[in-house]
Length: 91
Image (cartoon, rainbow, N blue to C red; front, side, top):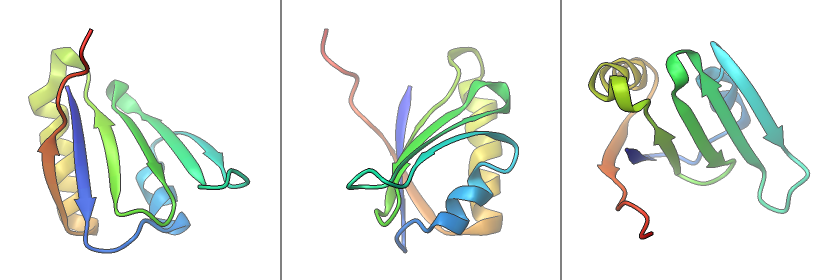
């Protein structure tokens, strides 16, 4: 399932790097809207744009609840965010 996490402040490069500290970061600062994608341990994936206030997070299907709890614990320790599931794409 895909979730959107909305932050109180725009995402900075330093916060992006904090999110990526235990994962693999793909960062494209030269795009007109600096895009990043992080693949973290356990298969969690984050996508976002520097300067925006939200990220999309995809949790591995087999571990949604445990990975979601770990990620939200990390966020509580490092920032404030609200979350809401995004609608499933139509096929």
